[in-house]
Image (cartoon, rainbow over all chains, first blue to last red; front, top):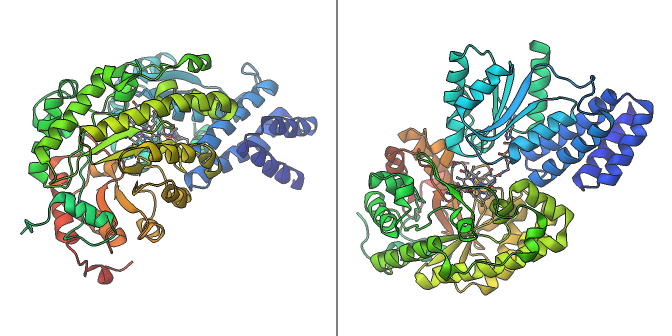
Length: 213
Length: 353
Ligand code: B12
């Protein structure tokens, strides 16, 4: 247990200083004694959660969150490839940047979830509410992660929620992105099921839903 | 009511000198509301400098705030570099596909000439016209995206962060090219009649990069630009956090800093007092749904936190009030700024912390 706690801290340090080689060495060592899923859940998830939370409180910068997610995603792909059956595919999840051409928030959340062992579909950016409804229904999406950076895009979640309902989809919409951080009430107003303040919230919300659905 | 002897420019200069003017200056950064005023789509509004000038003049006549703001939209700068701009009916235009598609494009990148860019010429014309309208009565606040923040629109945010971490040499090559363009663009705006330039540099904020990296990059660049600009710069982090780097921002030579609603205004005042003027910190996103009372209390809170002794300009925290913010809220903000912003601020002591 202590060994695992130390290694999480060491791993965090490697990520925050963008030391890919060191991060890789730590995981390799851990991989000798644990299953891939254990490595993910006991080292990667806590490290990424800690980093995400530290961004939220202003102690870590976004560039570090982004690079950490990227490094972890790459490393996890080497020992838990996308097609591996141990990857979590439930609930059926997709992510998109709704009516928004700013894709970094989506990229960060996507990488963090993939690094935590999830597989999810990426619907890309600049996609309209109608198109997103269409695709979500066709793919039987249960959880739709929506990232927006512009206020006008955040307000489009309302049409998305209405569209999904009308189409008979029970998909839950989890929103995130700058407008939701600046206005704490916005996510309810536009009819989302939940709001995540950062990528670690996305990871936690997915775990909660995984249990609930 | 108004002391006719104090102009908006005098009020602003007094506060910049860390003295108390007749009242707290209010800058309403309204880039898009002029289109509503003229009954035009945003695309049509931004197609002619005369529209922007008319919009600015009408808005200032209505709200009585202390500046005019000829900024069109940030993506105009990438338009000058040959990029496309996407227009919307209900929000600011955005940059389209990146002009730098692969890193090697940077090697052959040349800065565009301001004189050859139609969109920049339109902006310069708007500045000239506004200057001739307001003369020395009110400041003309122009804006430019910092050479360090521009690449987010030139190449995409993820590719840019990759570049910063993975190829510092090429990064500096991009910075050289961007600085050449930036200095020409800033000085052209000052020549056209801008009083000061909002240097928009949110990538430098603690929200986006750690301080150590900022000192190696954004800080260096801001200091170089400040030296070459023929007028004052206000560093604006576009609602990104500034407390972790406030001493560095001051050292880089800025006279004003735009601060975020997500940071404590009292801590900011303590760090800035007598050293740099605070511009902010009303939350533009929340403003969309503010009641009259909420607007008033936000204004009070900001003035109580940062107004004492001058060195404070009341504004939104981003340098642009969203299109969705209703006129009634803008009225409420202006009204509250006059009501609570008159010096001396003798109500503040009782207002409490
Ligand atoms: C850096 C910045 C800039 C830079 C770069 C912008 C860019 N990305 O292209 C520059 C200077 C170029 C710029 C320009 C503009 N900007 Co700007 N900018 C910012 C700033 C400071 C950070 C934006 C950013 O990219 N952050 C990185 C992303 C990844 O962060 P994030 O969205 O918060 O995502 C995190 C969390 O929210 C969460 N998350 C995100 N998505 C999701 C999804 C789910 C499901 C979950 C759970 C979590 C989650 O995880 C992420 C990582 O922790 C913000 C203000 C701020 N403090 O955030 C304004 C901001 C985004 N800008 C804004 C605006 C309006 C603009 C302009 C349109 C202004 C103009 N009129 O021209 C232009 C547009 C430029 C363009 N692209 O064409 C507004 C947008 C809201 C609005 N008012 O509509 C903001 C929010 C400022 C504000 N307070 O109003 N900007």
